[in-house]
Amino acid sequence: IFVQMPTALAYPMASDRFNWGYHSEPEPALDGRRISCPRGKGLGGTSSINGMVYVRGNPQDFEEWEASGAEGWGYKDCLPYFKKAETWVKGGDDFRGGDGPLGVCAGNDMQLNPLYRAFIDAGVDAGYPETKDYNGEHQEGFGPMHMTVRDGVRESTSRAYLHPVLNRPNLTLITKALAKTIEFDGPKAIGINTEIGGKAETFYARKELLIATGAIASPALLQRSGIGVQEELADVGIQQKLELPGVGKNLQDHLEVYFQFWCKQPVSLNSKLGLISKGIIGAKWLLTKKGLGATNHFESCAFIRSSSGLKAPDIQYHFLPAAMRYDGTPSISGHGFQVHVGPNKPKSRGRVKITSADATAAPSILFNYYQEQEDREAWRQCIRLTREIINQPAMDSYRGDEIQPGIDITSDADIDKWVKDNVESAYHPAGTCKMGKKSDPMSVVDAECRVHGIKNLRIIDASVFPTLPNGNINAPVIMVAEKMADFILGKPALPAANIELELPEQWETRQRKGVPLRFT
Image 1: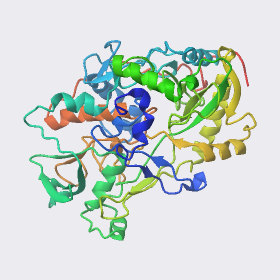
Image 2: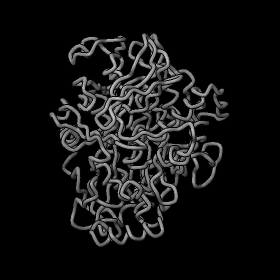
Image 3: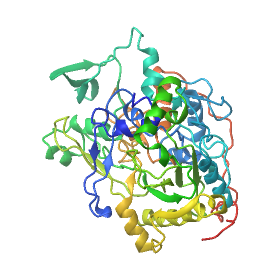
Image 4: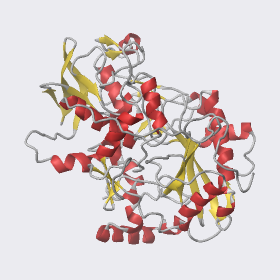
């Protein structure tokens, strides 16, 4: 039930039953903090424990992919597959899908709390545009947020894609199987070695082996199978089969902080966090699949550019009408609200490296968060722009004192210190089996997700992203899978979308469209 109920999203992530529970190594630029890295354990992978936010990214993200060597992955090539995957609750159009496997909605359409609309209005007051659909023609701006929820229930990839076809005669589902290594015949992948109930079993592929274990487990599986850097493999007693230096490198992730304020009116969700209120919400959801139980509560959001000279947004906001921790407990006694915010185009890069040939051993994960000067500067701008937005007139009747960071956190040094102490992962690891040309020494797969130098082996998950898109990564992972399905089946690619890619007006010289009503 906790996996299916959208409002209960904190519970599966906190459970060893559903989460592998990885942590990073001590992060040097975060004063040695070890950052949580949840990964889904079960059908649907991390889509069964994530926050259900549906963000495709900005068109420029996919133009960036193609420019980096991922030929055929520009936005016009990807848009048809975003549409193919989706059933948008408001119907299909030039940008949205209307009959795909994945149900997407807008929760309760911001109808159950006035703070959602106030946040959007504050963004407009600050001079930013309002966008009716950030997954449509215009991502930039403030507007409603979308989620992978269908008929009030979490729409994991398992629910959307797997469960409807379990009765197919050519499909066998095997659970509780641990993938240990890839089986080879020379340079050809021929199967997967697993452990099921303590017994070894090898499954052989008739045509191809498709790996979809995510940005942490996919490079680890390759490394255990002898694909990677000679020295790293030798350190754990693994004989190298293929030198592929990009395996496990190029690790990227989004960071975020909770920017919190007291709320002057008793309208926040903080009054709904007690056991009795949770029981009432849960009972209504069980009976009707409606109400506060049928949403992840992120129903308004924003995407803005941190400075002029940027073609696309690089800062994302999730607005939450409560001041609370990720585990669902209140962080204050009283009413409050918060925005989850962070820069979305980090320059810092990390790595994933196995610590043992044992598949049950957690890999060593080092994100190298906050290492690059550009990332630190982006965070300073992020904190200052957020204050300016929340201090606009539209929030006056709701905004109380700033809880955190706190009004005394203003200088570069103070912001740097506060971010170091408080930043957390947004849980979007990607890039560790980078897609690109074979001439790129750090690429691992080609534009059809085939591993360089190995026959019959593809990787299809967030590890193949060359760079992080501007947003949550579940939607682009599903798009990649849809696009790859056509490649695997030998079908021609869907025709490229017949659209124009528009850039923000005067983007070279303006950070935003308008002027704030109130400066801070």
